[in-house]
Length: 250
Image 1 (cartoon, rainbow, N blue to C red):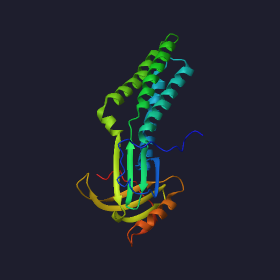
Image 2: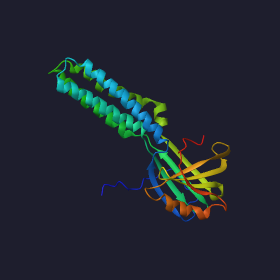
Image 3: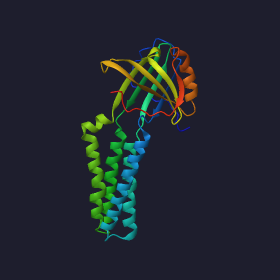
Image 4: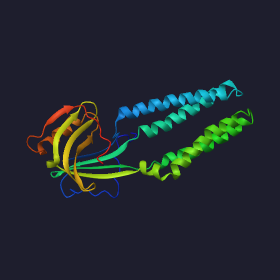
């Protein structure tokens, strides 16, 4: 009804290497391709720091009426916590395609232009709000500097920072033949099928031994593993184990 299960639109530059072969299995999914435990820890640490900043703001706003004093601090905390969550818990887009020759994986992440638009409008609206409230209570001028001012600086740093844009824009097309894989594992801790491989990476110019994490939709990892298993070389181990998502093949 709401399109939550809608397939992702593939990048226009994507050209499947094995496009001439019938697709055995394929899907798109958004997933977290990083260590979620580390991300959760970072989020908790920042949440505690923001809570401390909010209490400092509360103590600074002594001249403000009690309801507005509490409201502005809560607003700041919730807003900054939302921004933090969008940075520590981002998802990557994935497309997987299985054929007789092997597995292809496209992973991409487009820069969130919507976030810039949201921040820009939010900074403008909150600035108008605080200026209006300052006509009633002058102490709101300080809130206008801290709240909308902080949002404005965040917007500028996101919009004009080349490093920030590169960090939030990625594209990789990964190609593996079935003979490359040396182990098949069904993760016990995530909806992931892990394939260890050894092959020559043309992008890096050397032989690489790493893991390909195939992110699956809920309760489908066993079925995906059963599709993969017959195409692997004889003697390749098939196990169930806890899988740690690698950060990079570089």
